[in-house]
Amino acid sequence: LEDWAFVLLRYVSVPRVGLFGSAWMMYRLATDSFAKARRVTRLRGSGFVIERTAPGWIHTDGEPRETDARLEIFLKPLSLRIMAPAAT
Image 1 (cartoon, rainbow, N blue to C red):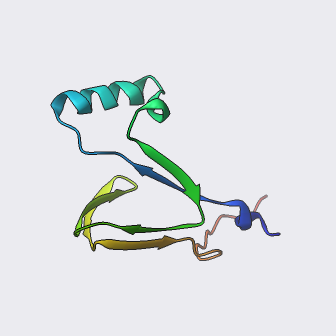
Image 2 (image 1 turned 90 degrees about the vertical axis):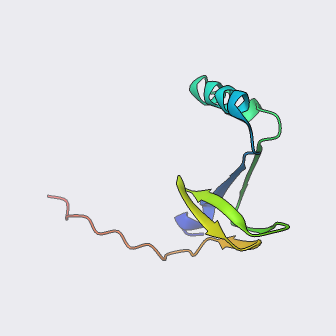
């Protein structure tokens, strides 16, 4: 198989939290214990279908945006072209 066949998406779902909950999440991030936080869902896969009860906001790579209630997220192998100078 090609190298790209082993690349997976990471899906992390964080519940809504209040002021104290967000402080606790920041502590978890700072102490590298975020994966142990309850109610945080972490998955890996080549694609995801997320169905919510209503449209809403999401963060993708830290960028907030409004989306539909149904999200279909999949990898597109070999779709990113990277140009680099030739080795000398």
